[in-house]
Amino acid sequence: MSLVCRVIPCLDVNAGRVVKGVNFENLRDMGDPVELARVYFEQGADELTFLDVTATVDERATTYDVVRRTAEEVFIPLTVGGGVRSVDDVARLLGVGADKIGVNSAAIARPALIGEIADRFGAQVLVLSLDIKRAPSTPSGFVVTTHGGRTETTLDALEWAREAIERGAGELLVNSIDADGTKAGFDLELTGLMREISSVPVIASGGAGCAEDFAPAIHAGADAVLAASVFHSGQLTIGDVKDAMESEGIEVRR
Image 1 (cartoon, rainbow, N blue to C red):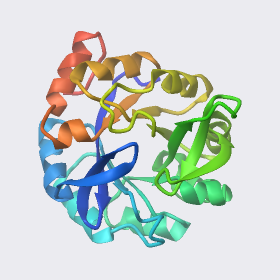
Image 2 (image 1 turned 120 degrees about the vertical axis):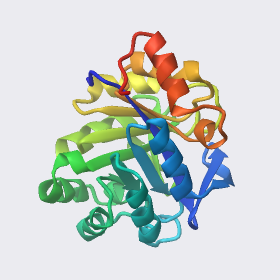
Image 3 (image 1 turned 135 degrees about the vertical axis):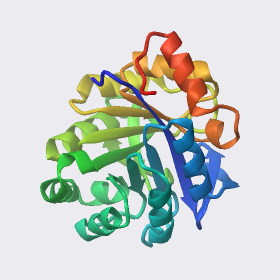
Image 4 (image 1 turned 135 degrees about the horizontal axis):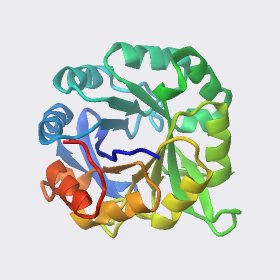
């Protein structure tokens, strides 16, 4: 859909620190979110995504102070998710500097929340975050999970994405739990299926291991690519990824 493809570092935050695991488990410390955000901004990231990965599980709000300090350091769109349960939560996050809000578990628990957020703030503010596992029992072969991937639902991933778009979601953040942290490449089948049913931008997430992994996700249908550990570890810079994408004929922002 998009003419220019975005590269988005993801800051998975737990207790004020950036963490990363494999398949959403065995989280390890990767650094300070504000410092990392500044580095990625300077490297040329198009956006940043900030996910409080234990807010929903711990039944608490997103860490507003970390969001505020991050927003003060970067001047690119900042998406924040984790623990968002109401329109008031969205208003407060926008008030401390977020540009877009990611919702997942709360929207599954009460789908009307999607429409409430879109009606008040506009669809462009709402990113539906989908934590997806392969599940042969579902029509598409993919199922949606909640609570940071810990709880499997009975929702078919494609059917839920389609419903959420109809309700007002402005973007899909498609997280492959099976690919997450494996560095084996994005789930191209999942990305392609989401592209087929989506009338809004699709962000591919989970599995990036080298600079050459990103272009195939765009060719499969993603409008943006999101990664975490390859950036946090210093294995890749944003520039490395954009260079590799350009070499495959993909237009990026400089």
